[in-house]
Amino acid sequence: MQDEKQVYSFDSLSVVEFLVKWRKPLLVVTLVAAVASVIFSGPTFIKPRYKSTVVFYPATTNSVSKALLNENAYDRNDPLEFGEEEQAEQLIQILYSDEIRQHIIDKYDLINHYDIKPNSKYRYTQLAKKFSDNIRFRRTEYSSVEIEVLDTDPQIAANIANDIAALLDETKNKIQLEQATKGFKIVETQYLAKRDLVNRLNDSLNQFRSMGIFDYELQIDHISEVYTQAVAGMSDAKAKLQLLRSKGISESDTGIINNLGRLSGSEATARELQKQLDLLGRFGGAYNSVKEQLEQENEELVKLRQRFDRAKVDVDEVLPVKFVVNSAKVAEKKTYPLRSLIVLLSTFGAFLFSLLILIAVENYKYLLARKQ
Image 1 (cartoon, one colour):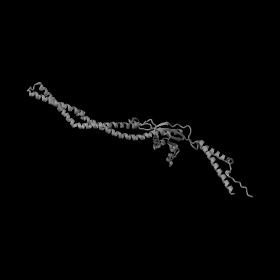
Image 2 (tube, helix red, strand yellow):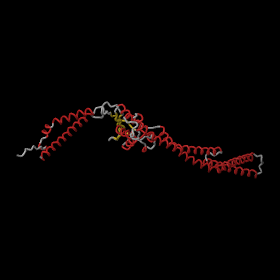
Image 3 (cartoon, one colour):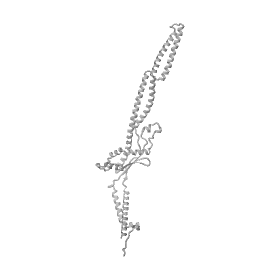
Image 4 (cartoon, one colour):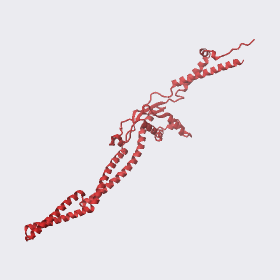
């Protein structure tokens, strides 16, 4: 007589029958997992972390002179306009700078705050990982920038987020100040050299003025006209004297005396005017050259002065690099861990794992039964 063989086939069992059959072990494992997850997700084993966030928009420009003092309307940036993607990415790059990170690490003593052993061989690697895990920067879909800080202390989380936002202005302005200072020094050197040259040219013109040369073109025209009149007066006086003398009129005659006076005065005027014409002829070319150069240098000096003033404004004044939408606040509720989610996933995972084990056991029994 063939022994009756009991054959187990999981495929022949309904899900409900299987669960009912193994309800006790499944229930025990599930309950144990639930209790364990509740215990191990508590603050004793996992420190709760709180999140604080700063949201801001980048500014389009930080150059005060370009934003406010530029006379070209097409090249002037609106200081009240929000920046776009490019400016946001630039600010994020600055947020990742070593200067900001080191300042936060030193101020809040993050090595001890993150429970990193100061004498650990890889303490800086551990610190960098903790820093990147707890402090993040990202550009939102609206082209704003978000600073997100997680910490076990909600007050410290808010303080770090706000400090980083403040350090962003300080760091970027410091970088720009270095460049602005170098630019200012270059413009200042050019401006002062040009101003000295203009002063020397003015001194030269003053020297010419002390010699009696004030305006070459105007003077040469006026003196030439007066000189011509003096020469004409001389000729007229000589002609009249010759006529009077030819008539045998006495030298004591009033007509002769008057014409002699006119002749003497015209000769004196002509001699004086000739001296001035000689002076103008000798120094007039140099005067015109200095005057023309001075006019050109004055035009360049005005342009350099404008550049000098704008560069000085960029060194002395700064604009905010961002428009803060939301400052960080102290969180009232923890962000991590989500105990309900941990308990749910742990419990479901334990139930699913035990179910797979039982399915494997059933299939193993089935294979053994087939071999008998």
